[in-house]
Image 1 (cartoon, rainbow, N blue to C red):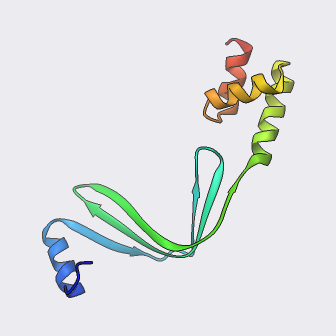
Image 2 (image 1 turned 120 degrees about the vertical axis):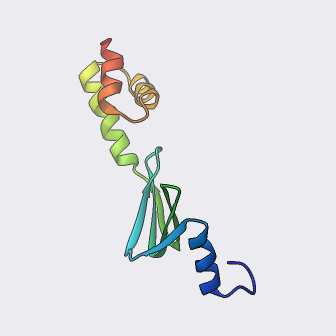
Length: 112
């Protein structure tokens, strides 16, 4: 918000510019990152902002947990090693090149 501006005035100005802000009643927000880590936000304040057909979200709250899902990655590596009869390093490299896509990693190593 702009300092000294009435929130109703701000909402009116945004509406005139074609910006619609809607409060989302969320209990928690979970963000799954590409590297497998997770960010958990509890008691969030979530706003959906619509402008010119595009929607974006603004999230604020308590970050409770940020962890990697190494257990899942290990099981994927093991599956690739069994399916393709390859080393752990080869399986990890294929999984990384496939951006974590198990099926794609197996296809790359099996030469299809």
